[in-house]
Image (cartoon, rainbow, N blue to C red):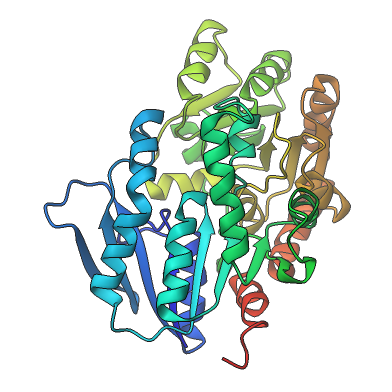
Length: 400
C-alpha cells in the first residue's frame, strides 16, 4: 500500500519520535510511506523533499508553530491547511495513495484532509492525540463559546466527520469522544494508544560517576519528570512536594525539559534554595539517556484538564523499565492503568500528603519498586508497541 502521513510533529532529519517509529513499522510491513511535515527554519524554497530511512519526507515551510507566541502560532495555523495542500499536490499529485493517516493537533487541518480524501479517493485514519478546542479551554487559553472556540469547534466536527476511523489514546478517551460528539458512530472509534519501537534491551544503569557529574546523590531514589514543562502538568504541586521532602534524603528529583513553566521552576528552585532536586533545560542526547537510565521512578503529572490525557513520556519510562508515580486528575485514566497493572502508584493531583507518602514508599521498598519496573516494561511490550498500532489501524483496510 502507498501511505500518506501528514503531521506538524514530524521531527527534523536524524531525530526520532513516536511517529517515525510508527511509519518505520509501515515500511517494515512492505508499505510505501510518504510524509508531509512542516518546517519553520526559513527555507527560501517553499518545500523540500528527502528520503529518510526509506521514507519519502516532504517538509513544507509554514512559519512558527511551536515555541512561539500565541499570535504567531495562530497566524501559522490559519494558513497551514492551504500551504500543506498546495505542497502535497505539487509534489505527490501524481501518486496513487491507498490510505491517509494524520494525528491531531491541529484540528485546523480538517479542510486539508477533506480535500485530500476527495482528491485521492481514499480513506482517512485519524490519530486523536489531543482534543481541541476543549484542551485550550481547560488551560484557560480561550473561553468556551468565544469566536476562536467556535471556529476551532467547527474544524473539530469537520475533522471527525471526515475520518473513516478515529484512534483514541485510551478507553476513557474513546468514551469522552463518543459522549461529546453524539453524531459519531462508536463503531468508527478505536482505542489506539501511543506506541514506540521498544529498545531491544533495557540499558544498564550508568556508573555512579554520572550521578556525581550532576550532583545527584548516589544512594537516593531518583524521581524523574522530563519533557514538556507546560501549564497542564500543574508543576506548582511538584515544587510543593519537593519543598515538603527537603529533609528526606532518600528521595531526589530530576526535572528537565522546555516549555512555558521552565522559568517558573527555575525561579522557584532558586528562591527556595532547593537542594533535593536538579533542574535542566537541555541535555546532550547521550546524557539524557543516561539520566533516564539512572533514574528509579518516572513521574506523570496532570491537572485541570477535563479531557483525558495520555503523555507519551509514559512510554519512555516503561521502555527503560521504570515504575511510574502518577499525580493526575480524575478525568484521565493513565493513573488507573498504571496502578491496576502494578506498574506504579497513582494519587490525586493536589493531594500532597498522599504524594509524599507514595514517594517514601517507593524510596524505601526496593523490591516492590523493581517489580513494578519489570511490570511496566512487560506491559509496554504487550500493549504499546508500533506493531500493536499497525495492526489496529490496518484491521480496517485488509481488503484495500
